[in-house]
Length: 184
Ligand code: AP5
Image 1 (cartoon, rainbow, N blue to C red):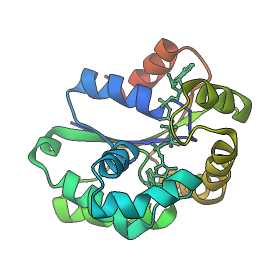
Image 2 (image 1 turned 180 degrees about the vertical axis):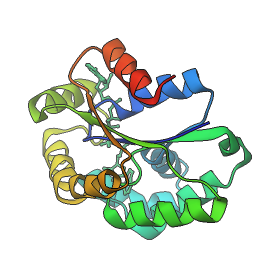
Image 3 (image 1 turned 90 degrees about the vertical axis):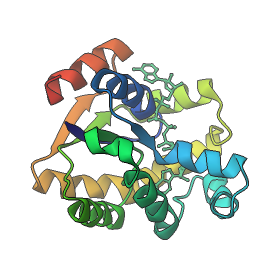
């Protein structure tokens, strides 16, 4: 059973590595970014509200994201474990996740933080070119990460769950480091 939170700045490889580990451990990969992009594409009420924040590189308001995650974690495939990618993103979300998990009789095992220098992040994202991968929005996403997400790492460190992983190496080397860290 693995319950994993993937942390790290935009472009650090959270999505790439979460897909690989989810496949290896046979657990669902839950990306709040993917869920939000699907809601935007389907023009749901949530998607319509979220789009303006995503286009600016700002965090979508907590109440919208928390409702979405709660629904997803309540689905039956999560009983065998899960990987959360891109959530939590701030202290309030981290505390809300713990409370949500407590009601399910669960707790996260590890918070895996992928570390990559900013210059590399910007190069990777510009090369990818998603809707929110233009230079101005990338810079804002990095600022938001530093202001709101980075301080949250102390929350997981104080619980003894934070593991730093060097994300500035080949994808296979990062996967190997993650597998070592969680012993799979
Ligand atoms: P989200 O979708 O979570 O985007 P992000 O955090 O900005 O992360 P990315 O998907 O850009 O990067 P990643 O770390 O997953 O890296 P990836 O594997 O893709 O969020 C988007 C927006 O949604 C947010 O700005 C916000 O508005 C909203 N949102 C989402 N969650 C939210 C939440 N919890 N609360 C509020 N708002 C929320 O890799 C990037 C590129 O690098 C790829 O091209 C990949 O091929 C390449 N790459 C990966 N690894 C390597 C490597 N080792 N070497 C070379 N290239 C690599």
